[in-house]
Length: 601
Ligand code: BDP
Image 1 (cartoon, rainbow, N blue to C red):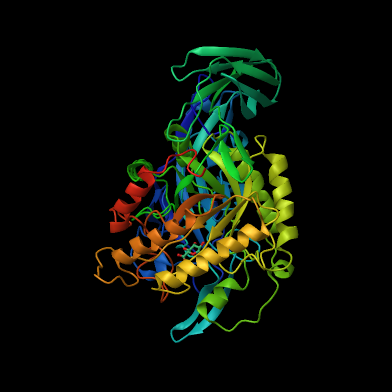
Image 2 (image 1 turned 180 degrees about the vertical axis):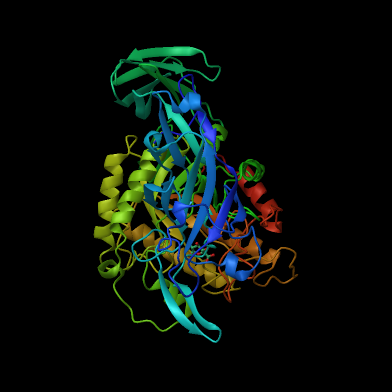
């Protein structure tokens, strides 16, 4: 799916700003918005809300912040006559509505979407009227065992009355609403629908195989522009191969972006791309034919006030901190991040593992961790996430396939990979993703600490073993040496189960309260976080097929409340307001001495 940009043939109009807002469904009822047809008139007594942003932290009170159910956004928009009266296509594009949306224009339902982290759009010419138009968007933040993220919901009796509660909700706050931009954009009637670019390297030259999807009639010409917008190669036709002599490569920490300018009839679109290759071979993860070592983090889109809302100043700050600490990569845990983040990673040379929103796809995990009574079920017999999961991978690959920063897809985070049925479930998604991705990137499945080598069902499918492990934290809390022994044992066992398969840690971390210190380290102190990381790194360094370390988490982040969370998850190497903890300085030194390439001999 093409990102909306202005070109000589396309206009982009932002609808961001202050909108009307109203909560609907409350803890006990199903809401009135649909039965009373709130979309047919202006909302009565609306609140003010900012778009883009998560709604939760923008007004006070638990009932507001923790609202579960439907909410309504509304804005009056006027499209200039000059635009409305042309034959151009006018599209409404919503970059993310978390998690489910119904969109009305002047009272008519014009589109619906499920999945809170992916853009969706529709042509609106036929619904637009002269003067003011009422745009109403109903959004629901409920997840269940058919959605991604997964997790169930129950109505529980509490002393103050019945209350909706989540079962197995993932460990991040359910920030919702219009989290990303809402825009109108135009294209000519005959237009470029999609572009795919597959780069390769031949000696000193870069080669791209391109293919263009169009709607309507016209002839296609394409042109490659260098960083200074100078034309370096040309071709014609919907498909083809272009050689870029003496090409500059896209490298981690040293990005170079070319532009493919596509002309089709009167339409023009500029798609950026990089020349780089990716391959998993002989136990190594190769970028541009050289063994790469991942240094970095699992992250979240999470910030004060905006929640998970688009926050470009924060993106710049986070990338600056990643460079400061000598990181070269991150995973989009646990959902697709904004297109603006992906474009920035392309530009800054940060390597990305791109994860879909498949988190909490496990019907036994939440219960067992909380010690609650729960009859064990087989997740893969009961869960109904497959249709959404297929859609999620289709939408993600379609959106992100040309990004040079994306080096691997992650099909899921900590799903029930230890349960029988996980192999078949993930194999279907693996095959789908492989077919969809023109660049045929490696694909991984991130596993949790119970998915050990003796029981893991997906180890043979995944191209890279991506492990989330918490030795010396959830297991042997406070005991570094016990953790060391158990961790070493598990890595040895993986070596036996999957000889020669590259392995990396996509999560390991210790909750650390900034400012809490001790001479003899104990859990939660800044000293303990550093010792915990040092121990892991000593072990990692002894395994030749160990290809990367991504710490949980880049920064402290908001979660639902719970006895294990002190105003959120504190495993950040930075605080939520992006100040370094003690361990950050240690990491800066370690990662400063690890090159991007050829770390493991
Ligand atoms: C892992 C999850 C992650 C959590 C983390 C933790 O993948 O989302 O935040 O554990 O417990 O299980 O800190």
